[in-house]
Image 1 (cartoon, rainbow, N blue to C red):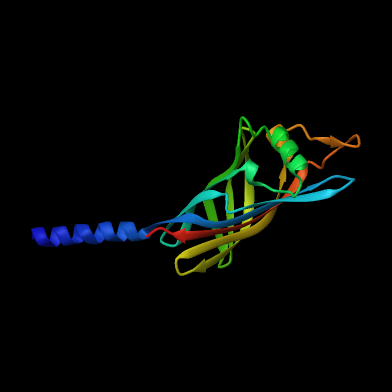
Image 2 (image 1 turned 180 degrees about the vertical axis):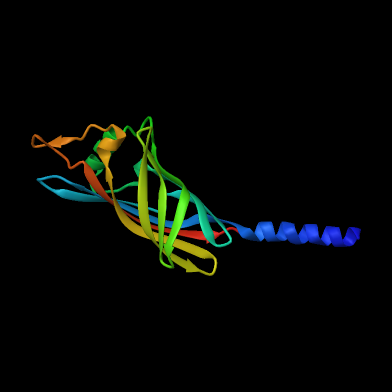
Length: 179
């Protein structure tokens, strides 16, 4: 009888361990695009993000991503240093996203309801991202908009006009399963 109970306990432990999967961010490309009446620009952060994704029985449960603001490159060191000043990167050097509410919309789409943290301020956002599953990898790809004013940032001015409040973000995040 003790052997049967021990065996059942091991089966349950194995089933629970199998049900909970963790994935670490393996590859990332995050792009932002800013706009002004005089010119537009794009900044890219590649391979600098860190992140973790958890799933239970194949359903995504949680995601946490952090990206150093200094990792974004717009091909203009002057613009990048001004951006770091505007974003208060000395006090808050990273932008973060966290979600514990992930809904599978269909086989190729998930909706994440979570928050961005920038300039020490958390703001709720709802993101729809494309989901690609491979054997031990999950990839999330998508585009969405973020308003800088949500994070109590003073928009810089150029030629007496401020930059647009809304920026476009594009993400390509590849997570590899931790075995």
